[in-house]
Length: 79
Picture 1 (cartoon, one colour):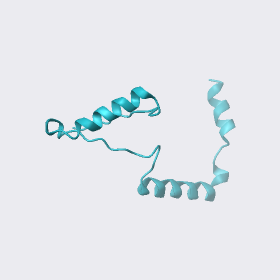
Picture 2 (cartoon, rainbow, N blue to C red):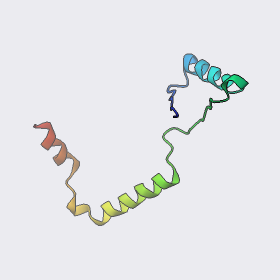
Picture 3 (cartoon, rainbow, N blue to C red):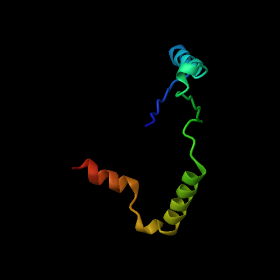
Picture 4 (cartoon, helix red, strand yellow):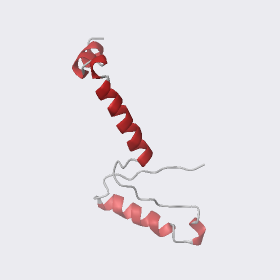
């Protein structure tokens, strides 16, 4: 089993310190099970980008079949 821990607001001292501590643990033999993987903010994989492009193309080809967002929103706001 693996876990994902997300550290946001990395400009804060506390977040930077925690990240630095975790990175330092990865350098020790006792914590060889620990990895710190830095990701770009909201980066998508090539596969995800391809899927989004495909969905957008489908939308453009079938745009008249879709309701406007404001119409959909009003339908649910009234409930």
